[in-house]
Length: 289
Image (cartoon, rainbow, N blue to C red; front, side, top):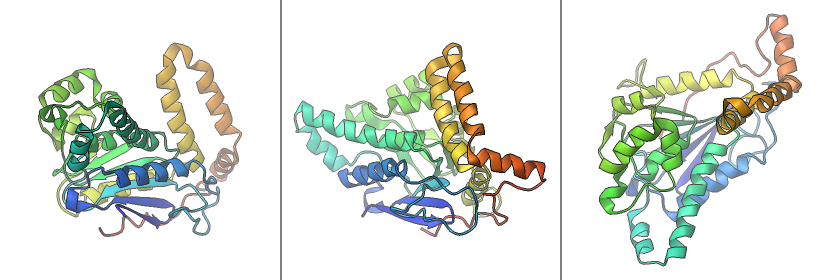
């Protein structure tokens, strides 16, 4: 199976594990990622109390607090599987539409997942691989990460990834890189907003896993339910715009305030305690690839 899952405390670590093809998106990978991220919404919310180890693993009962998405090998994701893409070139128009919709659905499953998704990008991502990066909530990358929209050089276009990429880097930058296909180095990608946090080289302070672990620790301090509502708030406020989003924003803060999670956190605050879901120990980090 090209996708591995490991529960590390309240965090689900999802690993694309197909380095022989540079973690390219074949049909199985697309189906597994889509099912995984879609199914998270149908799990029970995490208990407010942090005691015990809730089952957030593969097909577990509870939604994880955070999802870390990573890949094995030197390449994060090479995009579409070239063999399957060549076969689609010989298929009819309707088959091509169906395949593109399936891939686009996978990206939307990641984007719409009710749990924060943190990408750990250790190496290059091309084409659809950049789309997967752009679908995540927080992107952490090291200096070996590089990005390119190489589709035009193959005579095709970055179709289903375009809304995600434009949302992250803007129309002007997307226009430049969609049309040229030029490589975007990690520092430039950070300046464009494609990367949220740029790690230094090495395994010490400021390294990729050090930055990843600190980010996950920060997310674990937020209420799991509030994190989910924040994702909905971001989508809704942007979609409606400032003028039309007033009622939505008011309803969402009202919904959050009346939930058990907020009541427990406010009570803890007045008692000068930490929120009941916050654990004293730092997150253990991702398993070794």
